[in-house]
Length: 362
DNA sequence: CAGTCGTGGAC
DNA sequence: TGTCCAAGACT
Image (cartoon, rainbow, N blue to C red; front, side, top):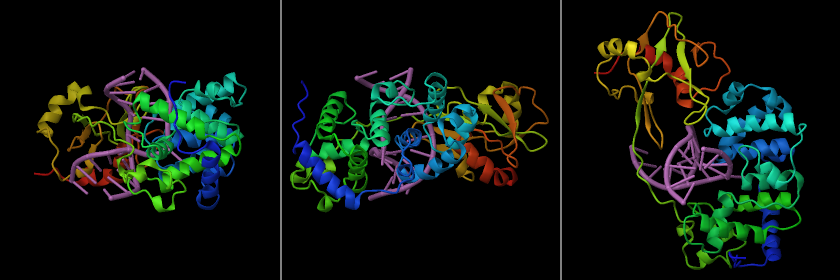
């Protein structure tokens, strides 16, 4: 083996300490711990990717209410799936979830494959998520390596280098493999995540309560905060896009479905300004200037990648013929169950009345 | 391998 | 008010 784990504890001792801590201080009443069916565990794991528990809980409850099992999910339209995903972010997760449900129902008889490799072949399920589904729904031995585990193991062994680097990640997988037991996989998997989520936190770890404080290499150096190393920073360019708020005589708003991949893939959003050259002159006359006045701060949505701007002056047209499969009129007073981009949804639900009545700033 | 993908919590 | 980044996977 080229990657020596060099653990600080034997696997048995690590498991004994961790499970003893978990039995007393672990989380035991999260919604997806109620009924650990593969379906519920799967949906929860997908929602929890890069997303905090408190954010996921209400989405998970709504999702389970509407789609209690994989067949209900497979029968739904992608639009309705994305509707329940609106605001959660990373919408490829929702699209992949829907695709995978179709595969499970149509090709696997509605049953989840119960080995890691078959699971990881489904869209949206990688190595760690596959392990989490196996361990938590069947209790069979499977290894996970999520952000919590990475943070804990990185500190415990003072692993240098950003965990996103493949070499570092390989070492962390080897360590995770070393410590993973052959029994109590349901509890162990939750425990190792709880350790990182509640004790070995990013900002303020509570080393005084940690069952591994006496063997933690980062703590021995007094450098808990230095691990894991942060991602090398890249100065992101700010892209600016102007969106068009277009209403018909009945007050409905023109929406456009975004391409299947990329930002807000498959979701409905406002059309982009540039897509209406025939209106360009009209808008230039009535909405001169290219920047939004600070009187409309909520019209500007800043992402980590770019910034969105929505035209400050609403345009009114009596009719628009270019409505097709990727364009639709949307009535904010009687909303359809479709996936709306989160800023657009908040605009249409809460800010629109203000926006339409307000006058442009100076 | 290095980018890309969302939103909100934490400080 | 800005920065960092979270139960990662895909291209």
